Image (cartoon, rainbow, N blue to C red; front, side, top):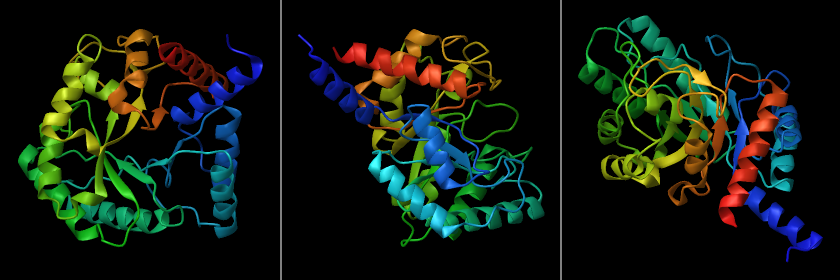
Length: 296
């Protein structure tokens, strides 16, 4: 029998065990993001390091960061997942775009050291007619230029849907980037459920098979974060249109299997669903409940 005290203790343990949050606005700073996350019952979150369409980043307020770090420790947050701007394209055909992308990456990684030991996620890029091989080589070249032994941040390559000329829509493509990077210990992968579904990986009917393939090609030790999204489109559509949890083609049951899979225990799950705060809180509550039910 679950007494009130035991239930409270078990729920607290489940909350720590499952790291889940959503994408938050960084406009009011780190401490504000921490408080916003807690209000949604989140214990991790994602944020853009600068305007998602590029441009200058907001100045870092060290006192604000210190407040956040203390708050995150007090409330047992997991690692947070910063997101690079969409305009960052390390394999751009135009050299000025690629050079600007490299500068943004360098600056972002420098800024990430104010919150040490966390994750920095980015879309590998679009080769824009140069071909996948050229794109892979260009991405790896810049990563070799910017990654350092001293950095505490792990840089995450995001799985893509294969829309247009995107690089990284297969596990093999991500592996080829990693293989060419010298400081492999500074690299990981963020698996986006909408993207891999749209890219042709059937996580509804064969999640074990998909994760086994990931392990064989890249290695599950590199899977550091998950973007948890439903999809508006069918398997292999290569579209990349996120849907609310349970309202898309992947469905609630399959996404619950993702968050409950033992291979993903301890990995931060980030919701990028088309929602407002009320919607994200509802999704977080629902997924925590289903996670707890699976643990019974």
